[in-house]
Amino acid sequence: MPLLSVDNVTKRFGGLLANDAVSFSVPERTVFAVIGPNGAGKTTLFNAISGFFPPTEGRITFDGADITGLPQRRIAARGLVRTYQLAQLFKDLTAAENVHVGFHLVTRGAIGAALLRPRWVREQEARIRAETRDLLAFVGLAAQADMQADTLPYGQQRLLEVARALAAQPKLLLLDEPAAGLNTEETAQLADTILRIRDRGITVLLIEHDMSLVMRIAQHIVVLDFGKKIAEGTPDEIKAHPEVIAAYLGTEAAHA
Image 1 (cartoon, rainbow, N blue to C red):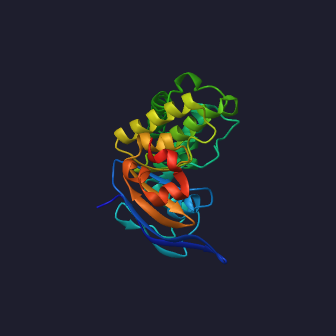
Image 2 (spheres, rainbow, N blue to C red; image 1 turned 120 degrees about the horizontal axis):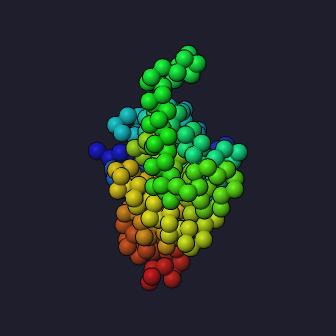
Image 3 (spheres, rainbow, N blue to C red; image 1 turned 90 degrees about the vertical axis):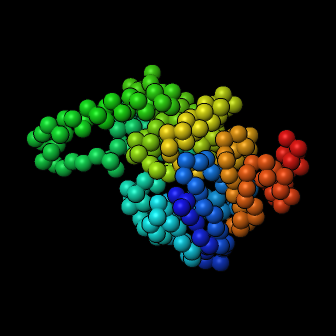
C-alpha cells in the first residue's frame, strides 16, 4: 500500500481550474517529485495535500487514512509535514530554538507541568536538547546552533527549515521548491541531505524547478501542465517523454 494516494484531486478557484483530476501514489521510503512550468498547479496541489485548503473534488489518503479536507494541524500530527517555497523561520530565535519549536507535535506539556517541572518534563527537555543537536548536525548546522536565524545565509536557512520539519518526526516530508535561491554548492548539500533523509526511512515529496537536482535524487516524477498530469515515470522516462519536452524541459534535456 502506498504511503500517500492522490485520487482525482481537483481544485477550482471560481472559474479557474488549478488542479484537474490529478492522481498518483507515493511509495514509502522514496524521493518523489512533482514538476511543471510556473502556474502548472504544483503548489496548489501541495496545499490540498497538506490541508492548507480542501480540494474541490477527489480524495487524499495518507498512511491508510482519508485525510481529505482535514486541517493542517491534524494532518501534521499524523506525520505529514511540509516546508514552504519561502523560508518561514522564527528569525529572532536561534537555530537551536527554531528546531525546538518543531518538537511541539511530538511532545507533551501543560501550564502545571511548566510551573512544577516534574521529572518527566526535565527528561523531555533534555531529550529535545540532545535531538536538536543531532538534527542540526544532520543538516550541517552544528556550528550555527546559537546563531540567530536571520543572520544565517539563505542556504543555511533552508536547511534549518528542513531540520525543524524533521523535529516533528514526519513519515512524509513535503518540500516546496527547497533549492529556490540556492547556489550550486548549496544545492549539492541540499541534495545530499534529502537522500540521507530518505535513508532514514522518511518519504520525501518535493516540488522543484531545478531539473538537475530532480533528476539526481528523485526515483519517480509526476509532471503537471495547466493543472493536469501529463506524464509520470522514472527520470529517464520523463526526460524522453515528448509532452514533457514540449511543455517544460526543452529539447536539450531529452539528450542530457
